Amino acid sequence: MTWRLSINPQAVPALRQAAGIAEQQGELERSLSYWMRARKDEPDNPEILLSLRVCLKMDLLDDAESSLTKAASKRPDDPAYQYMLAAAKVGKRQFEAAQRLAGSDS
Image (cartoon, rainbow, N blue to C red; front, side, top):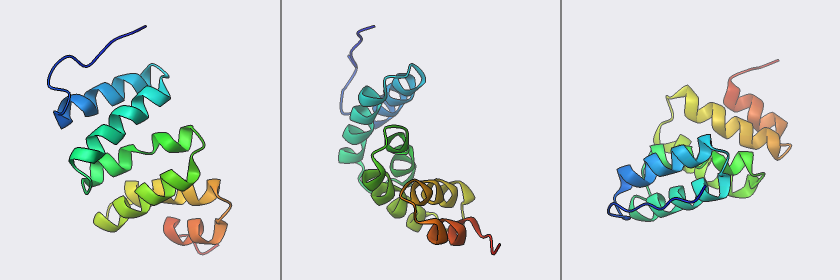
């Protein structure tokens, strides 16, 4: 399926919606492309940074860790952000760091 973002391509809400649709359809590269364009317009938006979790699905662990670290620092009390960062740490075999983020001492 080929489709294009025809409304203002710089509109972050449209980019976010397009990224979500592409991810749901399994088009991870397209989704990542839209997220990166949204990040270019709003580089410090924690929701956009969190959405770059698509990098985890693509096994781009360094990119995922970088974005998720920044997102988690912006929302330190939100467990979803800590969980996603912990998932990136597990993917990179940084188990102790992941365990600390998950709040588990066992």
